[in-house]
Length: 411
Ligand code: MRU
Image: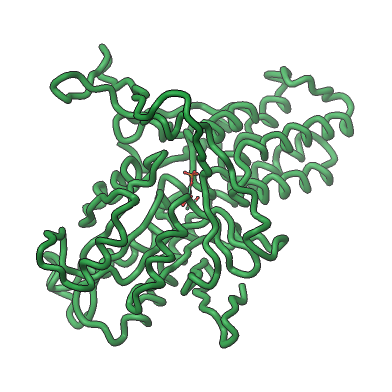
């Protein structure tokens, strides 16, 4: 099993992407050799998460340029003897790549940056070298920035908890971890950083050497995240891998769970008694006023948080996810996904004794199981927009931002 979503071998200009549709049942990497392959893995959601999509998009252009430069493959109708004609054809292919998934801004930003390189390059060799350099920096910076997001998120949380003593829990949705980024993660990065600090708390774990922490993370709630189940497939996989205590819940449980913890409801057995103090989510696009597009279900979590004085709602993302060209969330295009994602579930193939069926190589085959009445109308938006008024803090690699005295985010 692997937590590495993207493998790029610079010496061979080779890109391999972890097929996240198969996680957690199988670890299989798919080679991405050109822009068409990049489009395919992004559109089919074999790679997902705003930063990861952008990195794979940029590397897929790099790989295509590498094969064109070396004259290995020239199947895309490129005329390499005429640089302006070649550039125009490449730009058309990059424009098409952007259409693979419309909501996350990171892919569009990366493709726009690559197109700026295309415009100024004087030879195909130079163009390849510059796009390679850009893609590697995008990949490496994402990891560094995620650690900074983790640190800044912990600072915000420490500040909020200055009056609080004891264990606390957090809740998250979708996957925002190593699999959605080049490592560590954004919202899940904050949770990882919190756990790294909390597990040193004498009340929490084995290490009794660090004393004096008043509050500590003791439990994580991961929402299942229908219809694609990023929570149950990916986030729970990452939390389990890291041995962070957590419970998986369905997307319709958060209100009852949070309320039960707050009112210490005794007739409801709970996995932990620690109250949920923070709901921490990632973002696919944050616009200038702080409105935040993220996985469908995020908005309702923010509404729940707003009903409880002690629950803060945090959006975590690198600054590459901020879209300064749009003023409000109304301007964000929300991707609509196919109906069969709601009328069926993609899972591991099971036999009558509920065991996974494996093939001769020991691999699990996936099965799409129908769960709805045939031929019905379906509404399947992949994302929603949480209005800024429901967000308490936006954490980036630069800092954490809270609203000013006029209730506005200055991003
Ligand atoms: O449809 P997905 O799986 O690509 O959606 C992913 C999310 O909504 C994530 O929360 C978001 O991209 C942030 S990833 C660090």
